[in-house]
Image (tube, rainbow, N blue to C red; front, top):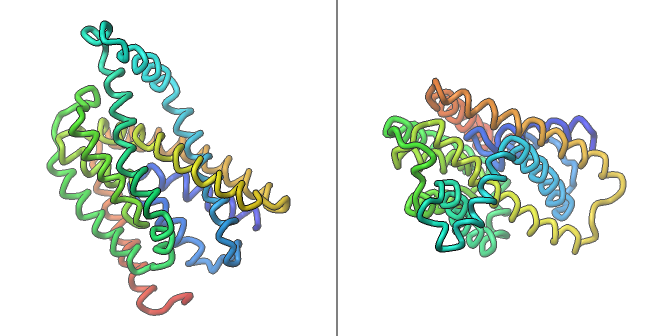
Length: 280
């Protein structure tokens, strides 16, 4: 695998994991467009590289949110004791709600993992999901209200968690769905983005551990792929941090319309190429 491919895919993963445009969809589309066959049908190696990229984006997000995570851990443990709950800050409640929000996607991913992976090369469907997700994001963004992240409740966690479960289809976008649901629930744009990104951490970590065990069980990573894997991981970490930082600041003063427009254009292009038999 050329280092250039690892760098490009690391950038794609890092940006599209947090910008609401679908990381899984873009990781399928980019090699298809360029005709890259780095893994030549080796599913275990492709899975290992996917794990490396996700570990990178997880590291980038943790680097951005580390102060919040320290507070969540401290206050989350504190509210376990009933006597502490009356005067506990909202961070303790939010910490546990973020864990709850991961449950629907974790169950769905565990039960349907093989079926979901089979959808990676149905490109017209990825294009359709990009457009459909864009329409829903546009509609929900117009509905959003003034709620802040501190107002996050159990109903919000469950509904956004169900959205994460639906986003396992490539092209949908996990961040896109959770932002869509949170805007529909009345959260302001900055809170919607922040909650979406925080909710991603247990999902990315859990999926990474699950897939990593598979990779280890299948023999690990060949020595000639170690360098590309490390480069892809580092690239996705840096770009993931940048995507979180940039998106949260962008939506403080702007709408999600540019991301919606991007989804429409890319989705339509992918559908057209797939129907025309491109690289089939």
